[in-house]
Length: 299
Image 1 (cartoon, helix red, strand yellow):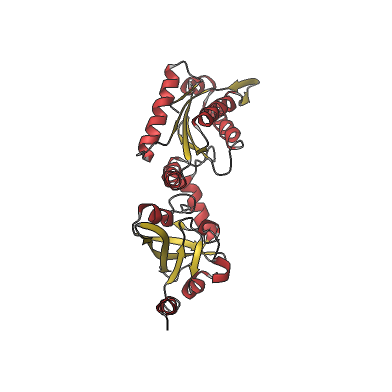
Image 2 (tube, rainbow, N blue to C red):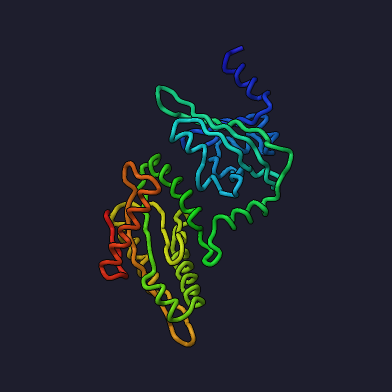
């Protein structure tokens, strides 16, 4: 028997689930134990992109790893092993906790694939609504229904990896509503909350599906998304500024609106989440010093 057939026979008879993906996370192999554990057959899974396969990995805090913090992508990018305990969505609709190991597969010094080996962490299963509830509470701001700071940091980490892998230009815009403390003191916190909610809804409804607007805290917001050029990034900052300026509420018969100072930057070689956000924040303060209601960009 050929050595390759022997290895295939062994992998198909071990009790651990095994699947292999290429650098774009397309599933190349799905063993018999993976079928038994998840309910998905090899015919259903092979050829699918992992993030669109239906497994919908989330971590123990309910964070959606396919969108933020994918360990397979990290394994490919960092060329090193990762271990974890996550939930997958069984084909029958319930969450199953599994222990996972992720390994890069290299050839001639280049990662050509990654393998995940997994097994059930316990016999207990979880209703998906519970995971979604935990995820929503942990990762979203209740006032604006935007992703929160915790989500943003995970999402930005993921987008930095993705930008490096696919050579795309990653844009971060940091915005702060002008004179918001004075607004609250003059009109009250209910009016201030209404302004925050309307601004969040206005911008969110004008974003691409893959982009994110997050509430960083208080009156601060952060945008993350890919652009084609520095010119596009600056134009995006101006579009955000105009959306804020043209969003208003009616309070005690009076139409009220706010403005936003914005800093815009692109991911640079060597950037981390911390340095990227710090630079965007510093650019936003330059907008404050330039008279507010304007955009400062370094791209």
